[in-house]
Length: 104
Image (tube, rainbow, N blue to C red; front, top):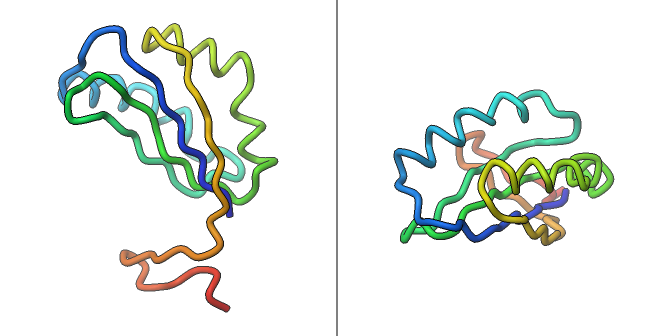
């Protein structure tokens, strides 16, 4: 699996309440997205940066989302261009499901 960390600096600080409204507005766009296992929306404690942590089945699936058009959409919505950093996730502890993925 692949974890993608998406980050961007906000032009003005955002409150957690405002961030929740923004995030809920885009969440349906990610529901059922092919290859996406899970997405966490992020807001820094000072409200000056935001982003997301995405768990993907593969890098190829992730790259289907992170296009120039997607980056432009993020910039229009939040006022900043995102950066995407990829990480291999060879082992995942899922306490909700009570399992360890990748331990074979």
